[in-house]
Amino acid sequence: MKTENRTRCIIYTRVMGYHRPIESFNIGKLGEHRERKYFLEQKTADK
Image (cartoon, one colour):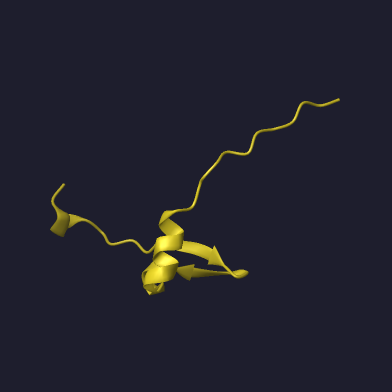
C-alpha cells in the first residue's frame, strides 16, 4: 500500500496515571519509550 493512501493513527501510552499520545513526547521521553521491554504475562498454575 502506498504511504499516501494510509490512514495516520495516533499511538497512546500510559504515562503518570493517564494516557498521552507519543507524538507529544519530548526527545528524552521518546528515547525512554523506545527502550521499553514488552512481555506477556503468564498465568500461574492453580493449586
